[in-house]
Length: 367
Image 1: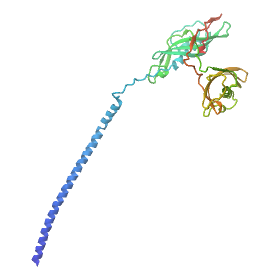
Image 2 (image 1 turned 90 degrees about the vertical axis):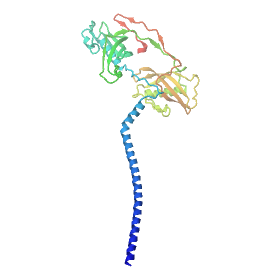
Image 3 (image 1 turned 135 degrees about the vertical axis):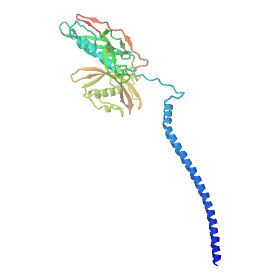
Image 4 (image 1 turned 135 degrees about the horizontal axis):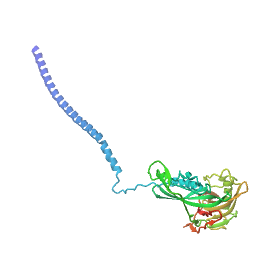
């Protein structure tokens, strides 16, 4: 029995060994398969990491290429020429006005007063203050070359008489050549900010007055005179009395949503209409048309101040119909012009002389 037990144990051991061997082989197969899968996945991870590093390393190069690609124009695109900023004449014009005023005021012994404007030698023989500019205005400017300007200045002159009093010598005109340094915004030739300065290259040149002009035709055509029976004229009269004399509220006479401010303090006490022109086409028509219809008016008035002085004024208005009445929808910037309206030149008035000095005739276009 003992032998049978030992034989059974031997058989069990042999069977166990066989089973373990089989199990070991199966385990090796599984382990080999897992190791093969891990190796494959590990290789893929290494490949992915390598790809990421390649992308990171190539980033700057790709960015540069994209930048160059976006910066360069497409084959079909047209190149836009760089725009040159136009130089401003404000600085040269203001300097020219100051120079002309100093030049007119200067005289023998005060030539140094011209030094801030003109560095050349000047010898004057008349008394200082023989002429005085009561007002100056630059009426024309031309940039001859970058930073080099020609400016025409109109000056209202008061001239001293032999009795040491002053008389009105009219408007005289002087052309001044100015050199400027600095950016174009100051009249210079530089594209960016720089030191700003001006100087005259010579003394002023007195020139003839510019041509006076007669304005072209206005775009109204219908005259209603000074009568106030027309509803549109009535609205204009009430509006201008509120606007200039403070008589009533403006919003009573304006269209909804229109915001206008009266002149304050009111400079006048009364406003009377002296003439009305409009574009209605029929001076006898006094009806108010359908809502939304518009009419343009040029209204001339006499405005009287608290001292009884009367001053003529003219206003361009746009009126709009609403609910059977006219309302002011706009205080226009300028009167309406007719089609193809072009100003024309008129003969200038010849200069006259008197016992003291020549008097330049004022130009209507410069007043």
